[in-house]
Image 1 (tube, rainbow, N blue to C red):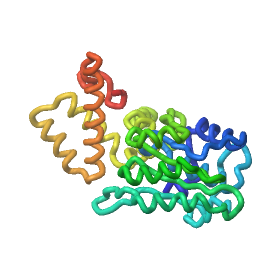
Image 2 (image 1 turned 45 degrees about the horizontal axis):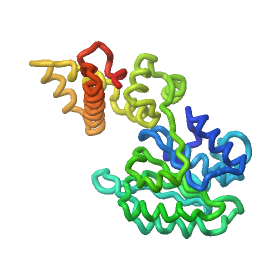
Image 3 (image 1 turned 30 degrees about the horizontal axis):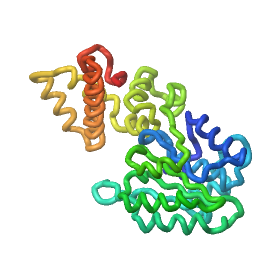
Image 4 (image 1 turned 135 degrees about the vertical axis):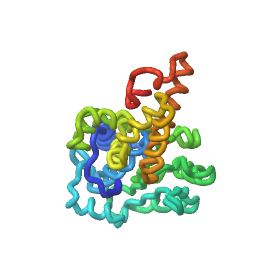
Length: 286
């Protein structure tokens, strides 16, 4: 299910309330940047807010049922007052950055009178992947914002954006999901395993779902064992278990190793031993 089709958002009530309050108070900034790690729900929140605005922006909550006409048109990419841009996935699964000519078209779209009398909304995902020409095109729109138009940026790495872009948007950071929300997202998983998934996913619901579906727990245990020190026949067995997996689980294994090594670097910077020399499980390394 893509973010534009997703009717559910867990754990980000404070962020929703901030947007709703700003809209009701007549203080809706023309540009918002929703930040947080990959899979945390940034695009889901952006489309959720877009639907709510396009449906009239009434009520204290943003939820629209998937039977609502606005929900259906947004999900189908057929709402006249909504434009969305995101990097395309090209060959070998690599993302291709949004083209500068696509970004230049944003201002023309946002300058039009809303077809249904409310707002024009643009959702722009991962603008940090763009080159400086594309980012400068975004900046031109931010410098002279059209009336009754809202630009929603979503970014996992806002530090890669031009400082002039960051200074012209209202930032809204999404926090990691807590244990209760993660349990709602992944029913049927034992509490101990759920806690490990939540920790190694960094509280990201998208990442947790990916790990749960891709042998994430098994890979976490193998990564923990590998870093703890294995030799001889057991080292060969661990290597064979990883090598025998499909690309997804194998990628998960190496991603967990990178996370663990980053934790080791942070520990070394403060004079602490790397976490794999202690007794804490991998899910608690930070």
